[in-house]
Amino acid sequence: MNSRKGSSGMQYILINEKIEILKSLDDNYLNWSDTENAKLGLLFTVLGLIFMSPDGVVDDTVIYSFLKKLSVYDDSMSMDKTMAQKIRSTQGETEGVSPEIFSLFGNVRDLIHREWGSRQHYLDIKELPMKEGDSIPHFEFRWGERAEMEIKKSKILINVCLMYNCPPSYFNEQRQKNIKWR
Image (tube, helix red, strand yellow):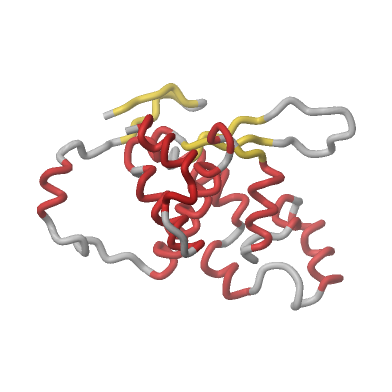
């Protein structure tokens, strides 16, 4: 069990260290809902983006631009609800996140910051100092404690290779990082 001091006291993450037992079980011992599978897939995609980035760090502009290209995020998700409704009413149904995607993921910004960052610790999110002219805070993202403990970087690299339909040798720098991090 790992612990760390959180803003509201101690927080604990339980980790099963008896991996040999789990390896002997059938891989399908958990039944995941479509929503859980979708969120897990998106988490692996975000972790892949971070893993493939220099020094394993990505700032929020890169993450949100990437998620926009996947059509799971739009800028109104970072605004208050009143402003977001005004933007959505002027954009119409054709722009932004489709209702089907929104029903799977909800507000992706909240999913990333609150669920994967604060609650589950898959992401380590640090607020950056405000620069002159900034109207909103900016953040940088790294793999969190739980991701480091539970997810093999080799699996993430394989997942990225499957997405791009290429062998791992195309990503030599990441392969070398993977060897160092084992």
